[in-house]
Length: 425
Image 1 (cartoon, rainbow, N blue to C red):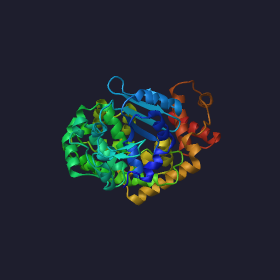
Image 2 (tube, rainbow, N blue to C red; image 1 turned 30 degrees about the horizontal axis):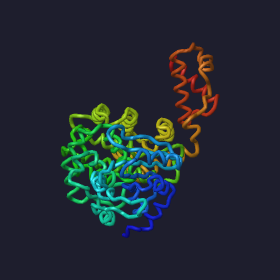
Image 3 (cartoon, rainbow, N blue to C red; image 1 turned 180 degrees about the horizontal axis):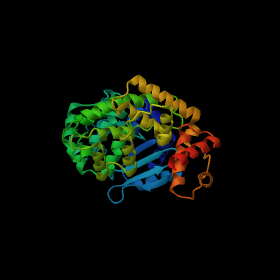
Image 4 (cartoon, rainbow, N blue to C red; image 1 turned 120 degrees about the vertical axis):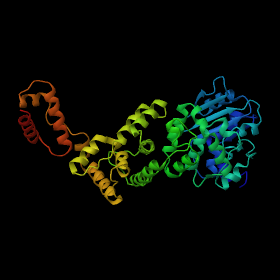
């Protein structure tokens, strides 16, 4: 692969790199990291990283005026870094403050992220053999200390193995990562949570899960003991049922009134896998939330998904299932492939999904947001009662009957409530 690879030349001729070259002038300036790697892989993105020898703030200010873009200081007093945010791009500029380019590249995690493209000379600087590793689809640590310096890179190794097509870590890098996985306990939980979320949002998770187990990150991390081997068999079984379901749903041409976000059902499966003979999945969820590995919102969503194990057998139950889960119904449907006892056969689960999609598409308005047929005052007059718990119970009964398709007009609603009053009386 030549240093004048046409994909890199095309990158340098794009508006932002061209403006960066002008703003830097005679100051050495290189594009680095993922943007160079991804272009050589044929992946086009809008996030760029650059490193300049000095005068980073002045270069950023000039560039912000030229593009135009908003300039934000990132590093505070610890390091000199600046972010430019434009309408359709983000550019981070790192000032190496006269440190050598090789020393700057040495602090990066993997060799495929540790070569640089000179924006003026159009040369590639590759002191660690990253381009050869790129051609071999190999993830290799830049130096022996990369994981010890920042144990979060253990999770980043998993994420990159999923993100970059066909890439695998070399054995020495795997061993370095495994030895550093206990250090994840000392990393800020917000950073761990963010990186784990990126892993869980990958298109396919199973290879990453196997790597998490191999690196002794799972189940230990979510139990507060990364680096300790443990039993991952339950989570493995759940994920092997869940992942084909998520893939099937993702392949459907549109999910009426639904969205598919795979991270939460995957997280629920991992937490369910922490259940033991002496501890429940709910207790494991509570520990993860209190440790900070889950946001309150994610914890609430996972708690619901952990309870999602009853197949909606009837038409009325299927309608209520859709209504109860609203736009998250695809994630709940995926959990039904993994958690019912006994597990649903694949063909039966697919039939259920077809029925849910057909109902959501054909009767979505009546299922997700049925218009009220009677208000509280009308119910009070019909039942001869004053405002209070009985009217609330009647409203809830009527609402559920509408969602389930048992009531469709005022006459049917009134008949249902008269029956309700008779039974209650």
